[in-house]
Length: 145
Image 1 (cartoon, rainbow, N blue to C red):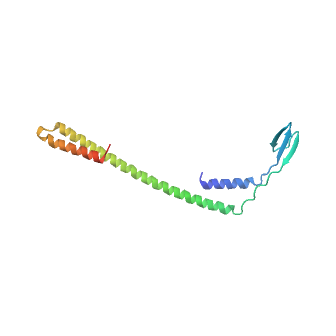
Image 2: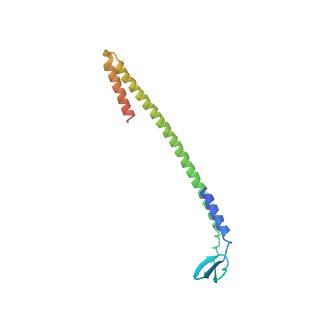
Image 3: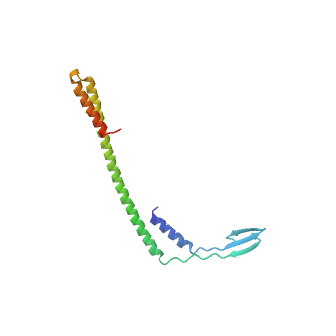
């Protein structure tokens, strides 16, 4: 429930409870004291006066409207922050996906360079090793473990 609904429910409860007044009876029977809303069946009885509910504030309607406006404003701010956060989360997810994709490509390049070293002809081994070392360095720089 929104804050405005809570405030409205509270205001209606206060207004509905105002006319409801009941007497409270204090009964003493056998040395025990009990309180009830019905007259005592036996024993001593004392009627306790219940205080009247306070009169509703003349500004209650204005206060309620002010609180509803404030609640609506806060709800709009929350929704705006939530939308911004969702956009930021989506942007970060896309960036993380691109980074994973790039790192996967660099790992594959390194694997292929290592395979080339193993399959290289004796005269091309040194060039293949250099290529593999550079692929490993690129992977280490861009995708630290």
